[in-house]
Image 1 (cartoon, rainbow, N blue to C red):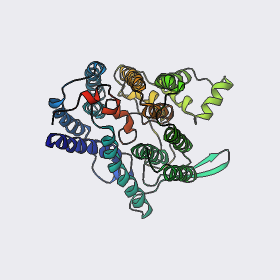
Image 2 (cartoon, one colour):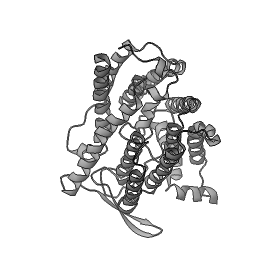
Image 3 (cartoon, rainbow, N blue to C red):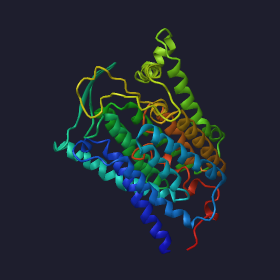
Image 4 (cartoon, rainbow, N blue to C red):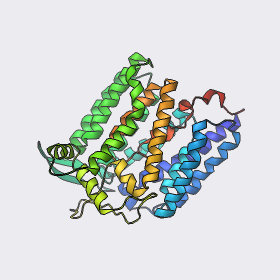
Length: 382
């Protein structure tokens, strides 16, 4: 029993550290305190390797993917001179056979006080609440960041945190959770004008309600959900690569996704997509300041942005990993997790947080115990 509790203490510390460091950089607090080098995150994440001395059996796809993820992470670190991606890959493979609910509880325990504390500090003017004035079809809107570097960063944290908390309470408080979710979506629309995240929250409410009443019964539609990652990433890349102002279809699609196709297309024309990332890429956005940016070129889509930051090999490997693990989860009948993973893939067509642990913690449960076919045969000896 001591071994298991000691393991959770170790995992909790490392996961909390990685999430906190990543989240700090998304708030204006990151401008006030010294940044923690990404190499430190690598060293801390390596502590989780101690877990493997007590694991007796590994799944076949884990034995295939884990070495590849670590090798690619190391090569990206060498190319980009940044170790964040390597730290993320070490964390992903080191959470093998860890309890999914425990991972979500640690994540929630870090993110909840971070979000509330940051909002409170912005309201009392310790850190700025950045406000952005933008024109919409409905008129002028004011977007608040509430102490985060951009309104959509705050809204994305709210979305992923809401989904994590709903999953932890998936068998209770349905009405309360749904009402709070609708209120949160309305708040995000009114004060942040983050329409994608508000819509994602509403869709997640419907997903949790569906599974609350239908439990985990099989439906034919679940069989196509594993390919969501191929469809979302492939569609986004195809539309971005082939975008042209001469096509009414592409212009309409570009307007629908708030100019992301044009920005991604410009980036593909300006910078080379290399195997393990392009250190010459410099994306300039509004994050952390409200001054006008004349050379704005920030690419929001996770799949397009990662091509430049981590390279084509990393993106292809992660897409294949997500596809394989989603298929395994489908075969096991974990349809709620599968549906949430699918929702996130479509969200990440427009948002840039697919593998950021302070946002999408669900990326890091791909090898958790609930998603492993050998989970119950694989428990450690107590």
